[in-house]
Amino acid sequence: MNNPLHVVILAAGAGTRMKSNKLKVLHEVAGKPMIDHVLELAKSLDPSQITVVFGYQGAQLITHFNDQTVNWAEQKHQLGTGHAVQQAVPFFSDDEDVLVLYGDAPLTQSTDLAGLRGRQFVLTATVDEPTGYGRIIRKGEKVSAIVEEKDANPSEALVKEINSGIIQAPAIQMKNWLSRLSNNNQQKEYYLTEVIGLAAQDERPFTAIKLADANAVKGANDMVQLAELEDLFQLRIRERLMQAGVRLIKPNSVDVRGHLSCGKDVVIDKGVVIEGENTLGDDVSIGAYVILRNCQLASGTVVEPHSILDGVVTKGACSVGPFARLRPGTELSSGCKIGNFVETKKAILGQNSKASHLTYLGDAVIGQGVNIGAGTITCNYDGVNKFTTTIKDGAFIGSDSQLIAPVTVGENATIGAGSTITKDTPDEQLTLSRAKQRSVEDWQKPQRKPSKK
Ligand code: UD1
Ligand code: CA
Image (cartoon, rainbow, N blue to C red; front, side):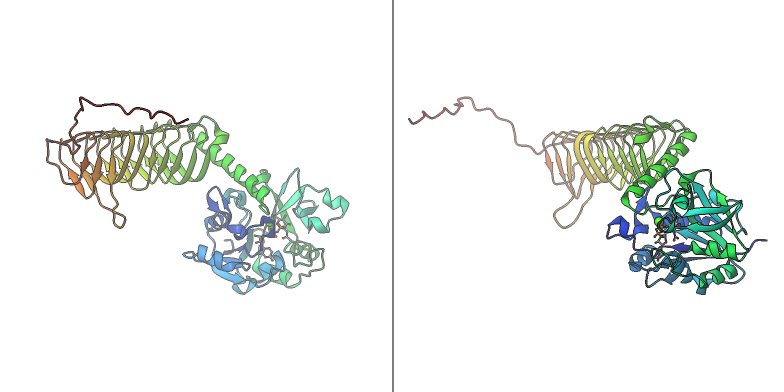
């Protein structure tokens, strides 16, 4: 039996190098704050407790974590990573192992920590460009010290094996080493990395666990590194999708900022951005430069290029776009078509209903087999309140009509083009409200006035 695991997440640093008002660990990678990725990892390890060390702009963090069950340890002054872990010590219990994660390193996955329960280790990796990372000074499998870049002598600086920041040790030992930290270094900080040297002196050295994938331990200290993490994360997501059978026509141009689950034979074209929680059924095709946010698209749905779909549900094969904008609350049954320059919001369309061009459908409940002509507007807003437009099965709305809600168009009703409909219209009948056409026989075109010289 291994000891219970206590995960400590460091998130108190000012993140000065980000040059941002936002707390560093709240900056997003793949649509999610870095700290959320780290918390997700922590939770996946089945820990006995999680302690988050907060400090600089801690209020932002506490608000963010609102509904999470974690211990909060305040680090009033940011005196270094070792000092940060010291703040969590009051939460330690002697039977635990303590695992330290850094809030600014979101790429580590539970598989990277597989088989390490109960061990005393530091996670390392070999990188081409070790600038900014602590260097691992080895004695075989064991680590005799970690030297921060700023304190490294020229030969230490050449070492390419770096400290991930992730370490694990029994709580009792950790407490002891933490109590002996000094700030006798270039940055006058209490480094967590000194723990590794103290352990070696005590002949209880840490084992270096070197990850094959060096990217898994990368952290973000500035916007350049944050962009690198984003790229690495996207690579991972795309690979996972393609391995699951999704066709990405131009993989490097597709970004998934959130979660995407796909059926068989889904095709995603160039430049697509996917945000939030999304599900695509079999044979869904997403055209170039489409944005999807929180959508559930049923099998066979085709989204043509340059469309934006936000909070959309399709219940069967539908066609959307090109250049369509579908906003939250849009629900399409099978066979629907939403064409170019059509905007929808809280619009529910029954089977085989179509709005092919230039239309606004807001707060609309539309039956089956309805045809909405070009230029139709549901006037849902009187400046204060929103009202519903109901269009019954089989209705035909002539082009350039305004439907002033609340209003109902009857079953199989026809609305003549160019009408402004203010009252409910009967089933089966033609209703139109436009002025009668007339022609003026003796009409004289205006003449140009003689120009004054
Ligand atoms: C740290 C390590 C370095 C390692 C690198 C990996 C130390 C001394 N250095 O350097 O060996 O290679 O991470 O990414 O540990 N934090 C606090 N309180 C503080 C200072 C920092 O909570 O007083 C938090 C930060 O919010 C951050 C984490 O600790 O989440 C790491 O701090 P950071 O300043 O980014 O350390 P690095 O310079 O990257
Ligand atoms: Ca860092």
